[in-house]
Length: 266
Image 1 (spheres, one colour):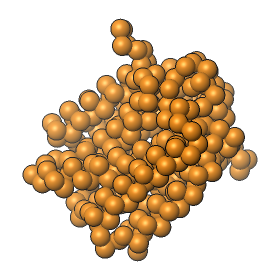
Image 2 (tube, helix red, strand yellow):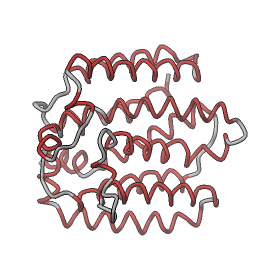
Image 3 (cartoon, helix red, strand yellow):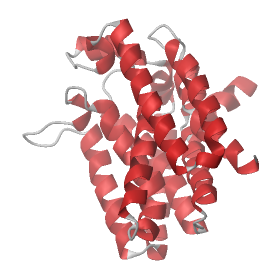
Image 4 (spheres, helix red, strand yellow):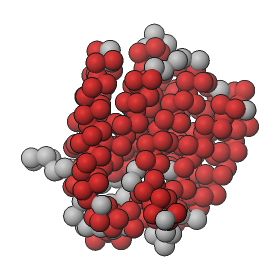
């Protein structure tokens, strides 16, 4: 029963949707910019909808998460439709800027999962899979809730976007290790399966260092927290490979988004 509950939370994408909430809450605290409840709800249900929706484009179950998804296909369809209706209702609480942002993120999410005429799916472009996931994440957790408030401070929003982009990208890249066999089978070039192990880790840690520097620049009073979280993620990413179980990625690595909420109580 306990295992079923854990699977439901983690593999049903409620865990990653909660992580998006924690990320916004943490940034709201640090930036001292309040975020309304409808926007929090939009971030949660928008994340849930996008992740449920992505399963419909999959042809091969290449991890434990996707094997479970094939067993719970009705559940994923139901929560996808429900989340989409909730998001549509919440648009009435959004500004024009936020509606446009959501529209752009929606287009990217659809294009990421499904083949469009003449261009294909974004996830099948060489080296692009994790980048577009990161773009959507930063759009949902930075641009949507804070972009309008920070638009008059272009330097601030640029550095903030860069910091969060690097942090989330380094969370996404290890998933290429999980998907390595399938990516190679379909001929998809990723940083993980093209670079040697040594060069891949150097690349990963360079991004991690850039994330730490930009976060410490923006929020210098909390540099010690970012040092700890980045070092911890570096260790976790070092051991991430295609042999690790699904919970290592969907549970542990995705959990770093929820881990950030601890900063609020420091």
